[in-house]
Image (cartoon, rainbow, N blue to C red; front, side, top):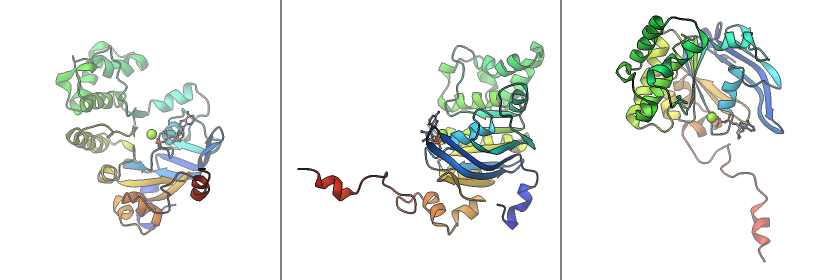
Length: 275
Ligand code: ADP
Ligand code: MG
């Protein structure tokens, strides 16, 4: 699946997904999905709403199990059952949800400290330092005593980001991190994703339906479509792709191989039943 030019990206990938099949009851979502996430890079996974991007993150984080196929993280198979091996693996993964999901009755400081209190026995003095460092990284050290209701949408997402990195994960997954933000806040989040990836030596996976934002921060792009990878490459390769499906999505064209119409009975039959 690697092209010769990008092959160095894929030696020892952080995540590898092989021939994955998955359906929600009868509804197929993935059929033979294959993917490798390069280590130390920002990989953006794009695709239309409902194509299974959030679901895919669920497999990597071990919240969902494929019907067929395997998911590897850092060379190890993601455990099939909830339990200590899965919790150990999850500690190496940070996750930023679209909703930010801050605990509303806890201050900014306590929200960021939360994973440390839950998962470590560190003394308060160390927690204080770690929280200050992570808040400083997202530019919100001065906001430590605010409550979530006092934060703008962009600030809330930055606090959630500080919380996602407080246990020093090796990888961070972002689910639609740009949704609902004004252009300035969006720019701040984009800059942070890149800076944190490079400064902390992280591997980042960003799920988005937004082509422009996705391409501007990606080292590598996957486009999902019809239960598989419809295309992959560097942002430049994707934007210049000759492939019809890739072009349609990257250029936001209403018409192309992906139909505009939801499957329906023939139109003439429908309108001819009107008496
Ligand atoms: P995306 O993140 O790309 O917008 P999702 O991964 O959220 O898409 O969902 C993929 C498809 O699976 C959607 O059609 C959605 O309605 C469906 N789906 C998601 N979660 C569930 C669930 N828990 N049960 C049944 N169907 C689901
Ligand atoms: Mg989603």
